[in-house]
Amino acid sequence: MAEVLSFMDVKRQKDFELEKNLLKELSLRQIIQSVKDCLEPLFPFLHDERDIITEGCIDFAIEAYLLGGRFGIFGYYGESMQSISARSAREEEELRMEFFDYLYNWIHEQYATFDKNTVYEAARKFIKDWWTAGFVQREKQCKLRMR
Image 1: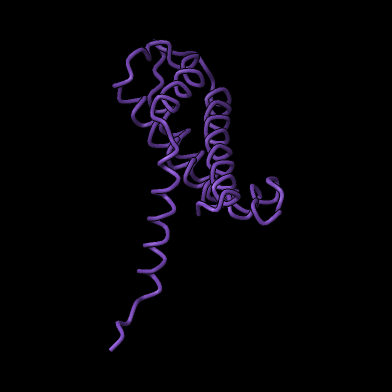
Image 2 (image 1 turned 90 degrees about the vertical axis):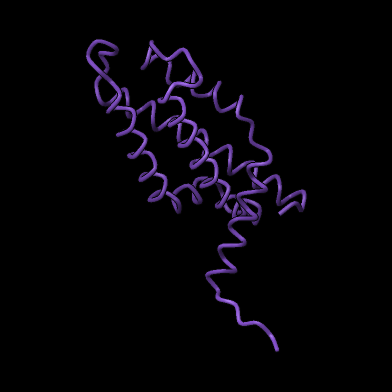
């Protein structure tokens, strides 16, 4: 007799395989360098990779990368990046606001004198860059038939 499978189990397995394939191409050194480049002006005291702020930023970078990767298949089928970005805008905005809250909660008066707009723009750029990297990587995998 055949085994009855839940569609949720199949979807979860496909998502797991997709994330595994995307994360194979991701370098931790690349993420750490991106964190330093993008966020060092906000946090001049950020010098050590093992710092808790950096670890949180790495988590957000991976989430944005995977989010972009989930939508990369549509680029393979010919849809423009702008329309795909508009389609994923809600999830991207949620991630961006969570990242903004995370960063803004770490800012103290003695470390930074930036207003909320500066922190928001840094968070927006960081999330968008990693979303784009995931999107491009997935599109490349699809073109190479490495789905």
